[in-house]
Image 1 (cartoon, rainbow, N blue to C red):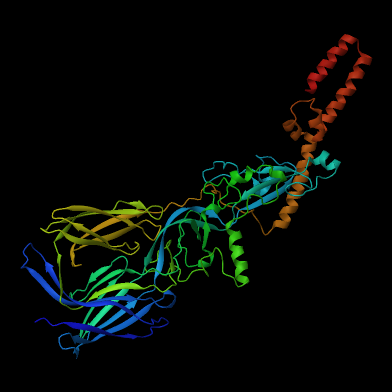
Image 2: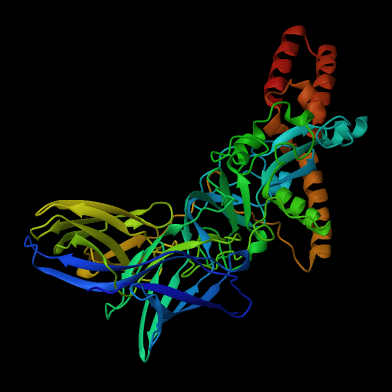
Length: 594
């Protein structure tokens, strides 16, 4: 006669460090007889008695770590209704790590933290002028010596109603030096930031279950990436069924970009460290990826120089709503004891504290209490059912090379049922450090059926690296039946500054700047005097001898002397020589002067 028992669990809760658990809920408990069928014969059954516990394991306060201890102390025999004490009661210890939400990142480009507008007051502004005229606003060149389009200075006339208020000077200043104007340009000094697109999120945590019976200890660890595990001694089997949905939603950032400060030289990917105070989440509509829109993050030379009514627009127009504006706005809120609107620090907890956090990975702690549904099997009962178990084999396992962060890898695995029965299987991965966890997949195969399963692989760093992943095939009893390894490579992420491609080169300084300024002052006076006497500028600027307006504007001394001599020669020749000879001498004098 088969004996029936009722399982009674005594729950003991205790504190580990700062984390506590108030209670554990037993959803159901039962005794069953689990039978394994390995062939078509109904007589060939391998049955074991198990206790099945279905429990909800909560996380600690604010989603932190939690620990629970439960003991199977007594059983009740249904035939006699007598309570019998278990001689060696199994003690179950459950440790649950803090839960986190992990977000997939895709590198987009780099942007300047604070684009700045510069202006230079001058009287010779020209789009092709050199640094001696427009200084920092000189047209820029890239590292190959090619001219960067739209980086030339923009010239604006003087006056009180202009982009920069400036004096036009008096009449003699205009006559002697030329009309005053200002040269404007945009440059990108200071810090740069990486921009990442945020994709699908996944939940992460791990639950370690340990069962101690006397001196015998069995343990397993389950999580979203490995939901079903059997201990090595086959005494303990745990199935993570899922999580009960909380009332507050985990944030989704698919409409946002994550910006992270870049360190080191331009174009070289560096370890960004843990300076989360500068990490920001900003809506995608605040960015211009092609750089042609004003007042958006990523604005470039073309957008700045192409503004309508440029000289009549206010100074710094087209350069608003940049990264530094949002960071300053957050700092003002923090000084008023308010939460930031854009920065991640202060809004979220446990930032990037997940296991194997990579250089460019992003995760936040889940602050609500998350209840995890676990199914734990220990002993047997009178409920009988049969499940089919069949051997399987992995036929192939490939992962092509791909670029880190900007793309994801695709692992392709083919498996085959090599047995005689239709059975269920599961497929999971065990990868080297630096690869994000992947969830376990379940499927059913008929005899000799082949299936091809695909998994997305996301590395946690942007550097070129070599990785090794092992595909693990499990049967319906959650036992490993085959394993295959694959080695794959990733290429380094190519950083893209977009259209903001020119490095900022500050003006050169010297400890002897005072004496150099005096030397430059006298050099300019001497060059101006030589130019005034020789008329070099006049010959370059004025198109002909009779361009009176040009010669007067640049005060051409040599032209004035020759023009005066010409006027003096004509009446003298008329008074001395006959008319025919006068005409000849006048013509000869004009030709000589030219």
